[in-house]
Image 1 (cartoon, rainbow, N blue to C red):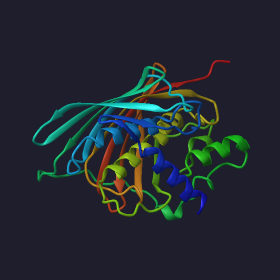
Image 2: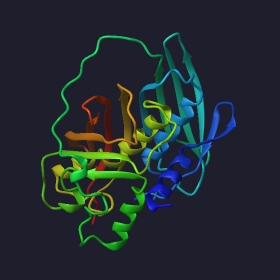
Image 3: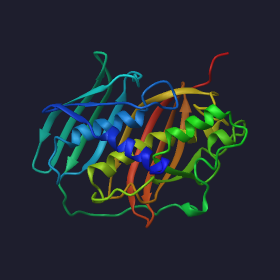
Image 4: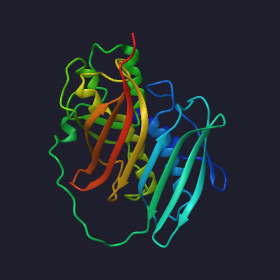
Length: 293
Protein backbone atom coordinates (compact mmCIF):
# COMPACT_ATOMS: atom_id res chain seq x y z
CA UNK A 1 0.00 0.00 0.00
CA UNK A 2 1.33 3.46 -0.90
CA UNK A 3 1.95 6.13 1.72
CA UNK A 4 -0.86 8.26 0.26
CA UNK A 5 -3.42 5.42 0.39
CA UNK A 6 -2.36 4.55 3.93
CA UNK A 7 -2.84 8.18 4.93
CA UNK A 8 -6.30 8.24 3.33
CA UNK A 9 -7.27 5.04 5.14
CA UNK A 10 -6.09 6.62 8.40
CA UNK A 11 -8.24 9.70 7.69
CA UNK A 12 -11.29 7.56 6.93
CA UNK A 13 -10.73 5.71 10.21
CA UNK A 14 -10.52 9.08 11.96
CA UNK A 15 -13.96 10.00 10.60
CA UNK A 16 -15.49 6.65 11.54
CA UNK A 17 -16.64 7.67 15.01
CA UNK A 18 -17.41 5.23 17.80
CA UNK A 19 -21.05 5.36 18.94
CA UNK A 20 -21.05 5.50 22.76
CA UNK A 21 -24.79 6.09 23.23
CA UNK A 22 -27.64 6.83 20.84
CA UNK A 23 -26.57 10.48 20.32
CA UNK A 24 -23.06 10.42 21.79
CA UNK A 25 -19.97 9.63 19.73
CA UNK A 26 -16.24 9.45 20.38
CA UNK A 27 -13.41 10.25 18.00
CA UNK A 28 -9.63 10.09 18.07
CA UNK A 29 -7.24 12.82 16.96
CA UNK A 30 -4.09 13.00 14.91
CA UNK A 31 -1.04 15.31 15.00
CA UNK A 32 -1.34 18.62 13.13
CA UNK A 33 0.99 21.38 11.94
CA UNK A 34 0.45 23.13 15.27
CA UNK A 35 0.26 21.56 18.76
CA UNK A 36 -3.54 21.32 18.86
CA UNK A 37 -6.29 19.43 17.10
CA UNK A 38 -6.65 20.46 13.45
CA UNK A 39 -9.84 22.48 13.06
CA UNK A 40 -10.90 20.65 9.91
CA UNK A 41 -10.75 17.38 11.80
CA UNK A 42 -13.06 18.41 14.63
CA UNK A 43 -15.48 20.09 12.19
CA UNK A 44 -15.62 16.99 9.98
CA UNK A 45 -16.06 14.65 12.95
CA UNK A 46 -18.83 16.81 14.38
CA UNK A 47 -20.63 16.73 11.03
CA UNK A 48 -20.25 12.93 10.96
CA UNK A 49 -21.86 12.77 14.42
CA UNK A 50 -24.74 15.01 13.34
CA UNK A 51 -25.26 13.14 10.07
CA UNK A 52 -25.48 9.77 11.79
CA UNK A 53 -28.65 10.93 13.56
CA UNK A 54 -30.34 12.06 10.32
CA UNK A 55 -32.14 9.94 7.67
CA UNK A 56 -29.86 9.10 4.76
CA UNK A 57 -32.11 10.83 2.22
CA UNK A 58 -31.45 14.23 3.82
CA UNK A 59 -27.97 15.47 2.88
CA UNK A 60 -26.32 18.35 4.74
CA UNK A 61 -26.90 21.74 3.16
CA UNK A 62 -25.16 24.00 5.70
CA UNK A 63 -23.06 24.14 8.84
CA UNK A 64 -22.05 26.93 11.20
CA UNK A 65 -19.36 26.32 13.78
CA UNK A 66 -17.28 27.99 16.49
CA UNK A 67 -13.87 26.89 17.71
CA UNK A 68 -13.98 27.51 21.46
CA UNK A 69 -10.74 26.09 22.86
CA UNK A 70 -7.60 24.45 21.44
CA UNK A 71 -8.14 20.71 21.24
CA UNK A 72 -5.73 18.24 22.81
CA UNK A 73 -4.47 15.87 20.06
CA UNK A 74 -3.49 13.31 22.69
CA UNK A 75 -7.02 12.84 24.05
CA UNK A 76 -10.28 11.53 22.53
CA UNK A 77 -13.09 13.94 21.70
CA UNK A 78 -16.68 13.24 22.76
CA UNK A 79 -19.42 14.57 20.48
CA UNK A 80 -22.92 15.04 21.91
CA UNK A 81 -25.72 15.55 19.38
CA UNK A 82 -28.83 17.55 20.20
CA UNK A 83 -31.83 16.80 17.94
CA UNK A 84 -33.09 20.36 17.59
CA UNK A 85 -35.69 19.82 14.87
CA UNK A 86 -37.07 17.10 12.61
CA UNK A 87 -39.36 18.82 10.12
CA UNK A 88 -41.03 17.68 6.92
CA UNK A 89 -38.24 19.14 4.77
CA UNK A 90 -35.44 20.20 7.11
CA UNK A 91 -33.59 18.55 9.98
CA UNK A 92 -31.43 20.55 12.40
CA UNK A 93 -28.74 19.23 14.72
CA UNK A 94 -26.47 20.85 17.27
CA UNK A 95 -23.20 19.18 18.25
CA UNK A 96 -20.90 20.00 21.17
CA UNK A 97 -17.38 18.54 21.20
CA UNK A 98 -15.93 18.01 24.67
CA UNK A 99 -12.44 17.26 25.97
CA UNK A 100 -11.33 17.13 29.59
CA UNK A 101 -14.81 18.21 30.70
CA UNK A 102 -14.84 21.40 28.60
CA UNK A 103 -16.50 22.29 25.31
CA UNK A 104 -13.86 22.83 22.62
CA UNK A 105 -16.13 23.17 19.58
CA UNK A 106 -19.76 23.86 18.73
CA UNK A 107 -21.52 23.08 15.44
CA UNK A 108 -25.01 23.60 14.09
CA UNK A 109 -25.88 21.71 10.92
CA UNK A 110 -28.97 21.62 8.74
CA UNK A 111 -30.08 18.81 6.43
CA UNK A 112 -32.75 18.92 3.74
CA UNK A 113 -34.79 16.39 1.81
CA UNK A 114 -34.23 16.77 -1.94
CA UNK A 115 -36.65 19.02 -3.82
CA UNK A 116 -36.81 20.81 -7.17
CA UNK A 117 -36.45 24.60 -7.24
CA UNK A 118 -35.17 27.69 -9.05
CA UNK A 119 -31.53 27.29 -9.98
CA UNK A 120 -28.69 29.54 -11.11
CA UNK A 121 -25.02 30.07 -10.31
CA UNK A 122 -22.14 32.41 -11.11
CA UNK A 123 -19.50 31.33 -13.60
CA UNK A 124 -16.52 29.28 -12.50
CA UNK A 125 -13.25 31.29 -12.51
CA UNK A 126 -10.39 30.38 -14.80
CA UNK A 127 -7.78 28.06 -13.33
CA UNK A 128 -4.95 25.90 -14.70
CA UNK A 129 -5.58 22.18 -15.08
CA UNK A 130 -4.61 20.34 -11.89
CA UNK A 131 -2.47 17.80 -13.79
CA UNK A 132 -0.20 20.63 -14.93
CA UNK A 133 0.55 21.72 -11.36
CA UNK A 134 3.14 20.36 -8.94
CA UNK A 135 1.99 18.28 -6.00
CA UNK A 136 2.15 19.82 -2.54
CA UNK A 137 5.39 17.92 -1.84
CA UNK A 138 6.93 19.04 -5.15
CA UNK A 139 5.98 22.66 -4.43
CA UNK A 140 7.91 22.80 -1.15
CA UNK A 141 10.84 25.25 -1.39
CA UNK A 142 14.25 23.63 -1.07
CA UNK A 143 15.33 26.00 1.71
CA UNK A 144 12.39 25.07 3.95
CA UNK A 145 13.65 23.50 7.21
CA UNK A 146 13.41 19.69 6.95
CA UNK A 147 11.18 19.37 10.02
CA UNK A 148 8.75 21.95 8.64
CA UNK A 149 8.67 20.23 5.23
CA UNK A 150 8.07 16.85 6.86
CA UNK A 151 5.17 18.21 8.94
CA UNK A 152 3.55 19.81 5.90
CA UNK A 153 3.80 16.62 3.85
CA UNK A 154 2.52 14.42 6.68
CA UNK A 155 -0.41 16.70 7.54
CA UNK A 156 -1.67 16.64 3.95
CA UNK A 157 -0.72 13.14 2.84
CA UNK A 158 -4.35 11.97 2.62
CA UNK A 159 -5.19 14.71 0.12
CA UNK A 160 -3.73 15.51 -3.30
CA UNK A 161 -3.46 19.29 -2.90
CA UNK A 162 -2.11 21.45 -5.72
CA UNK A 163 -1.63 25.24 -5.59
CA UNK A 164 -2.32 27.14 -8.80
CA UNK A 165 0.34 29.66 -7.70
CA UNK A 166 3.10 29.48 -5.12
CA UNK A 167 1.83 28.82 -1.57
CA UNK A 168 2.42 31.41 1.18
CA UNK A 169 5.57 29.80 2.60
CA UNK A 170 7.22 29.93 -0.84
CA UNK A 171 6.83 33.72 -1.18
CA UNK A 172 7.24 34.90 2.43
CA UNK A 173 8.29 38.54 2.56
CA UNK A 174 6.59 39.43 -0.72
CA UNK A 175 2.96 40.62 -0.34
CA UNK A 176 0.61 39.49 -3.10
CA UNK A 177 -3.02 39.81 -4.07
CA UNK A 178 -5.10 38.21 -1.28
CA UNK A 179 -6.34 35.37 -3.44
CA UNK A 180 -5.40 31.71 -3.73
CA UNK A 181 -6.57 28.80 -5.84
CA UNK A 182 -6.05 25.18 -4.86
CA UNK A 183 -7.16 21.99 -6.57
CA UNK A 184 -7.77 19.05 -4.25
CA UNK A 185 -9.05 15.49 -4.15
CA UNK A 186 -8.52 12.57 -1.83
CA UNK A 187 -5.40 10.49 -2.43
CA UNK A 188 -7.44 7.52 -3.62
CA UNK A 189 -10.92 6.57 -4.77
CA UNK A 190 -13.87 6.16 -2.43
CA UNK A 191 -15.63 3.11 -3.80
CA UNK A 192 -19.27 2.52 -2.91
CA UNK A 193 -19.93 6.14 -1.99
CA UNK A 194 -22.41 8.19 -4.03
CA UNK A 195 -21.73 11.83 -4.88
CA UNK A 196 -23.08 14.08 -2.15
CA UNK A 197 -22.97 11.38 0.52
CA UNK A 198 -22.11 12.31 4.10
CA UNK A 199 -18.54 11.05 3.67
CA UNK A 200 -17.82 13.28 0.65
CA UNK A 201 -19.28 16.30 2.45
CA UNK A 202 -17.27 15.58 5.61
CA UNK A 203 -14.04 15.14 3.65
CA UNK A 204 -14.57 18.51 1.96
CA UNK A 205 -15.21 20.00 5.39
CA UNK A 206 -11.91 18.53 6.58
CA UNK A 207 -9.96 19.99 3.65
CA UNK A 208 -11.71 23.36 3.75
CA UNK A 209 -9.78 24.39 6.88
CA UNK A 210 -6.35 23.62 5.41
CA UNK A 211 -5.82 26.65 3.18
CA UNK A 212 -8.68 29.13 3.61
CA UNK A 213 -6.67 31.72 5.55
CA UNK A 214 -3.76 31.52 3.06
CA UNK A 215 -5.19 34.53 1.27
CA UNK A 216 -4.87 36.59 4.47
CA UNK A 217 -1.20 35.60 4.70
CA UNK A 218 -0.54 36.44 1.05
CA UNK A 219 -1.78 40.00 1.50
CA UNK A 220 0.94 40.62 4.08
CA UNK A 221 3.76 38.48 2.70
CA UNK A 222 3.58 36.03 5.58
CA UNK A 223 4.67 32.42 5.19
CA UNK A 224 2.23 30.87 7.63
CA UNK A 225 1.85 28.67 10.65
CA UNK A 226 4.50 26.13 9.72
CA UNK A 227 7.09 28.83 9.03
CA UNK A 228 6.24 30.59 12.29
CA UNK A 229 5.99 34.20 11.09
CA UNK A 230 2.35 34.33 12.24
CA UNK A 231 0.39 32.68 15.02
CA UNK A 232 -3.29 32.02 14.75
CA UNK A 233 -6.27 29.74 14.94
CA UNK A 234 -9.70 29.34 13.39
CA UNK A 235 -12.47 31.19 15.20
CA UNK A 236 -15.57 30.24 13.26
CA UNK A 237 -16.41 28.37 10.08
CA UNK A 238 -19.48 28.27 7.85
CA UNK A 239 -20.25 26.15 4.80
CA UNK A 240 -23.19 25.88 2.41
CA UNK A 241 -23.43 22.74 0.26
CA UNK A 242 -25.20 23.63 -2.98
CA UNK A 243 -24.81 20.61 -5.26
CA UNK A 244 -23.59 17.01 -4.95
CA UNK A 245 -19.88 16.41 -5.52
CA UNK A 246 -17.24 13.76 -5.03
CA UNK A 247 -14.26 14.46 -2.78
CA UNK A 248 -12.20 11.90 -4.72
CA UNK A 249 -12.51 13.91 -7.95
CA UNK A 250 -10.81 17.24 -8.61
CA UNK A 251 -12.39 20.22 -6.85
CA UNK A 252 -11.24 23.82 -7.28
CA UNK A 253 -11.01 25.80 -4.03
CA UNK A 254 -11.09 29.48 -5.06
CA UNK A 255 -10.24 31.58 -1.99
CA UNK A 256 -9.84 35.27 -1.17
CA UNK A 257 -9.59 37.56 1.83
CA UNK A 258 -11.65 40.76 1.69
CA UNK A 259 -10.28 42.15 4.96
CA UNK A 260 -8.13 41.67 8.05
CA UNK A 261 -7.74 43.74 11.20
CA UNK A 262 -7.93 43.62 14.95
CA UNK A 263 -5.81 40.48 15.04
CA UNK A 264 -8.33 38.65 12.85
CA UNK A 265 -8.51 37.76 9.16
CA UNK A 266 -11.51 36.80 7.03
CA UNK A 267 -11.39 34.22 4.28
CA UNK A 268 -14.19 33.43 1.84
CA UNK A 269 -14.21 30.82 -0.88
CA UNK A 270 -16.12 28.74 -3.37
CA UNK A 271 -15.55 25.10 -4.22
CA UNK A 272 -16.22 24.05 -7.81
CA UNK A 273 -16.42 20.70 -9.54
CA UNK A 274 -14.13 20.34 -12.51
CA UNK A 275 -17.07 20.60 -14.93
CA UNK A 276 -18.03 24.04 -13.54
CA UNK A 277 -20.73 23.36 -10.98
CA UNK A 278 -20.67 25.50 -7.84
CA UNK A 279 -20.65 22.89 -5.07
CA UNK A 280 -19.83 24.70 -1.80
CA UNK A 281 -19.46 28.20 -0.36
CA UNK A 282 -17.14 28.65 2.63
CA UNK A 283 -16.47 31.56 5.00
CA UNK A 284 -14.08 31.55 7.95
CA UNK A 285 -12.61 34.08 10.37
CA UNK A 286 -9.43 33.32 12.23
CA UNK A 287 -6.96 34.84 14.63
CA UNK A 288 -3.92 36.03 12.66
CA UNK A 289 -1.24 37.67 14.81
CA UNK A 290 2.38 38.65 14.31
CA UNK A 291 4.49 36.86 16.96
CA UNK A 292 5.92 39.02 19.70
CA UNK A 293 9.73 39.18 19.88
